[in-house]
Image (cartoon, rainbow, N blue to C red; front, side, top):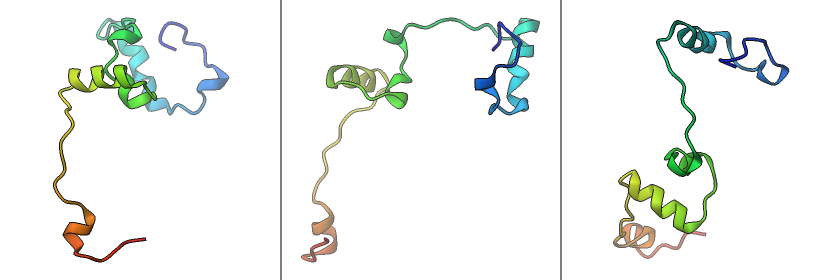
Length: 82
């Protein structure tokens, strides 16, 4: 959309206030660059990933698994849920 200012049928749902980025690109205030999927950290939030790729991206974002102590039954007592 930034390179071709023609309105596309698929993009009708995009509100006009978001088209300001096109103007900023034209003025040279914003530069868009292609990023390969191999370097896209956001993939973890937008795609279902296989284990190795998910672990790689979570580590790159500084997210690590934590261990839980106890659980719902421990907190509530001996009451079973469900």
